[in-house]
Length: 309
Length: 285
Image (tube, rainbow over all chains, first blue to last red; front, side):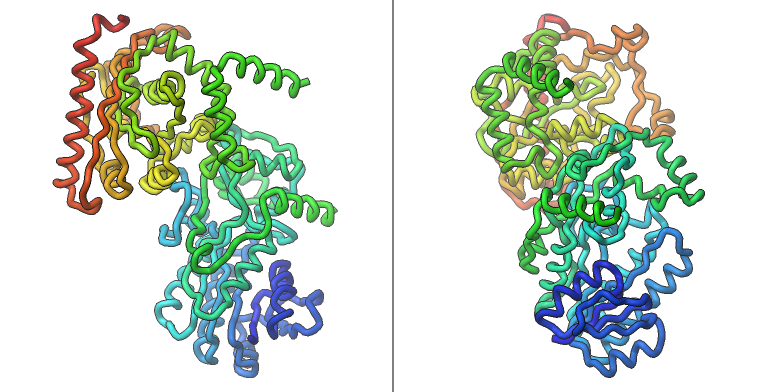
């Protein structure tokens, strides 16, 4: 199978390329330079919004596209997020239709449901996407997910898979991994929600399952067994600082504005409320079973902390 | 040092609990397959710390009398109770009855109000003891695990009612009946007598509750007495477990049909309350 991976220069993109290139022909597309990919992976350094990107689709006649190139930089402007994420995804989708791509895998996130006080313990795939309600900066990510859903209905000839993994843990530079790598992370005093994390290798495995012919639809992807946040801190061998929730928000907001932290204040809701997903569909339809348990995942995180230092 | 104090305290507490109770807690922990807490954050080990306190209130403070515990069937069951007393001590006492007085101790899971997860400390405390946010999906999942689930269909309407409405059942939600029909779960009506008098509510300040974003703002006379007034009055609790009720039908039936079945449960609870009120000789006896 010939597979295109957009956003291959990211850590997860490279990890996925490393997994898929053994059995498939992989072509990467990214606007960032990418060096550390397997030698047989051809990489095109181009912005997915550029017209020239279509030529890559025309020349390669991909069987499948894994769309990972979604910008989530809290420092980037809202206009940049919208332009890159919504327009970029839309372009990739139209190329898929025009050039006969049979499968599109879109990596969304369980964060699109949003951590909320009245969330039921396990959110199903049909739950409304409320992530933007309290965290307006991720509205474009919710938009990308919804774009994928409308694409699914408009173009049934393309098997579309939307994956919503829980917090991906590993070398990736996302908020949960960055947070758990801290030696003195904040917690909110009096709150200890149960959280779900997934090993980055398991996420790549879920993408591989999603590429199998006949699989389409939306899938929540929970990883290892859920555990209270305090247990994750213990396994991450960090010493959290409990901050009262009434002052934590304004303090973090101030620190973010002063560029002393990379975490925007609404992320604190993840330390307070539940945002857990039901993985029944991923297990039964996708045939996905995570290979790494919580101890494994957190040991991997500790290793990535050492590597970073 | 801290670890040593913790271990000694735990040993002392384990010495206070009956072997049956410890076996039940160990069984619950074993069922988690090496994990400390389940998917909901329920940590059975924490029961060891709470049960002595609950036991003190159950046996000494409220001198609770539980009647009909043998009627609670094994396996999944919905315990449907009246709700009263301003704070959910009635839930704790029903749970204590099933742990301390039942022939085979059972850990009850109960459904909590939607604003509880917003409360610091209380949210963690409830979750660790097996209390779960009251959504139909959560309740369904617990029933599938064959747990006894305690629900209060009156919700905040019941617990926060002023004393002038004591022992008058408020409007029942229909969700529990739809779930019972869907999962084929028997319903055990439960009547709690005594809780209405533990805190005397002379009225609710609805506007203050709305401003603060809480379900109710009761005016409680007891709280006028500093410190001691914060404790509930040592009234006598009577908890009556009724005969299990079995219902059949379509869980998607319209509200009128479901309402008829709910009325049967409500009447059963009302009967238990009337029996309790007739059997008591005063608030404290």
